[in-house]
Image (cartoon, rainbow, N blue to C red; front, side):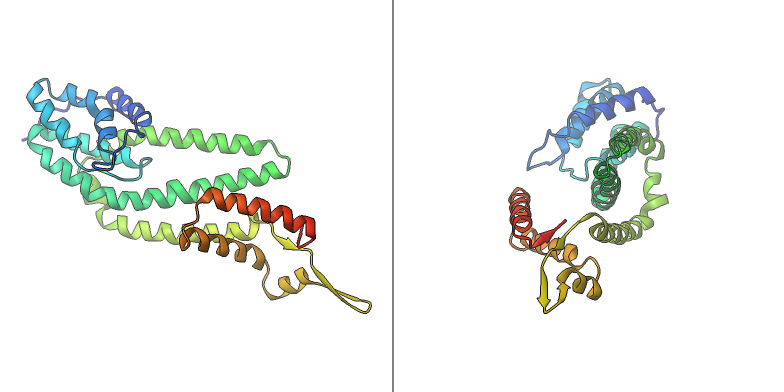
Length: 266
């Protein structure tokens, strides 16, 4: 039996801000469950004046939960919507809802929120900065503020939809995730050719004829060296399990040595 909802936009906004400051509350047993409970506790207190019911609901949110933190507010907001309508009898449905969506939503969040959009805006901002255009930093700042607003509003969006999230988007989530993965790989691939600047200064001379190696490479495949460099870095990080910090140090040293010896050119 459904009951009258008690949560307001102010309650959901408060939960959103509490989520932003509690993401680091993490453990290897229940993952993001402590952060989730910290975020929604004021909402649960308002929903359950009875301490016993509050305890049951709080323990329900302490069950295993893990997804992409930037997209998680949408799931938790929808869970709050279900529980605010169904009350204490809906706890099993709330947990099943969270567990069922945390995987697919994580795929969307990792692809779009973590990889694709920051990479695109960050690359554009970096390119503008390299050209001496100060608007690059404001572009990145605008993106950061806009994405922060989206992360806060997700509680309200999810709460408004509740269980309808599954009925409306259940079948489309998998397809959407795969499409975003393909788009993300395409964007990253194009950024390699446009952002990674790697050229060789080697040349060969036969009599009066000077043959530049870079010209030969460009004749075979433009941007071949940036692609090869990214492939080597990916191999060491993915297969050899070399840490990112060591790879960055290697790139800096290799760039300095290559530039000093003429192997690399500006």
